[in-house]
Length: 431
Image 1 (tube, one colour):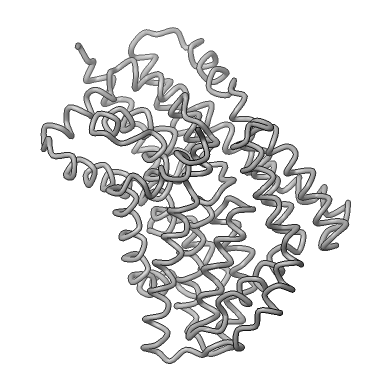
Image 2 (cartoon, rainbow, N blue to C red):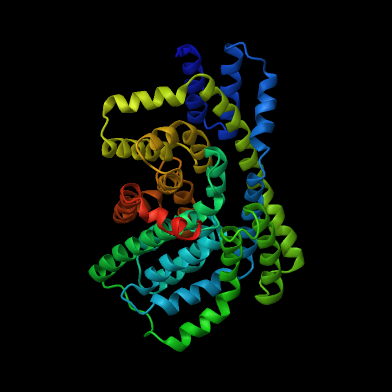
């Protein structure tokens, strides 16, 4: 295998220099790939061909629908209903509002599929309430941003669709089913951390548990929770594809928000859709340019080189899994989620498969790693959103988040070394 080291250097150095210069990630990927192809004397018409090829995927069409669904449900009064349901479930415990924050992110994340949307919508409601009830503002912000990562794991997550596209041949339905248990493990881990801190700081309890109140809130929230069932059950049972289920979910979300919860008007519907356009354009442009980057990586044998470099350090599967996680965590500190999935998957997935990691399990591993990266400076998008919502400085939030980083790392290790944590449900329901 002959590799052009100069072309590799041009590709990687240009990419990282542009990232450091704060060039938009999609343009950084595209420019570095174009320069690499130009040096290799490959016709630049390949740039357009690879971009079209990267976007020419039926499953990728689900991404715009899922993002739109999350935006509509987030603006349609869904958050308040789910907060009330979570409060009825766990609000009675010591540090009940913190527990509510965690559980509500599990519910809402299954609708929005976005950690940023979770933090912006739930944080603007829950953080002021927690502060009024006697919680420290940095603690309230820390638990809000960390629990938002559950939304990346609980289906329907558009990041799972992006991973399935990058990996090629991985079932979106299997990925959806695989996310439930890791999301629940993360929620339990964060709740344990919340309880320990709440007892130590004597944070308040909520109202006593009431089965009647719980059933009432469940009845009210069932319309919101049904959105998850439409997508997941429909895909898993083979009633429709992920793309078809996403389109149906958008229509359902609009009808529920306008006619049942009455949190949105038809005018607000068009406003919500228009606000999705910026996000959608960035994601789809990134998918196109990442396809060129992936073409360059494959042409230069980068996946094989990366695999050889990592395995040269050790042939112990445990060590290799830890190294893969460290690489993904490092990338999470300097890049956003979607580009990591699109760029790292073709490189690291073959190595992961070579040491016995199932592609579905690896999907959960990479999504969770990227979720942690959203909370770490200097790029941590969700960290900055949490600071903007709560008006608490980044430094204070990071300090308050340290215990919850530990909870997330514990969850990551469970997902990495216990395959059944992510493969149990797909094996039961995807036969």
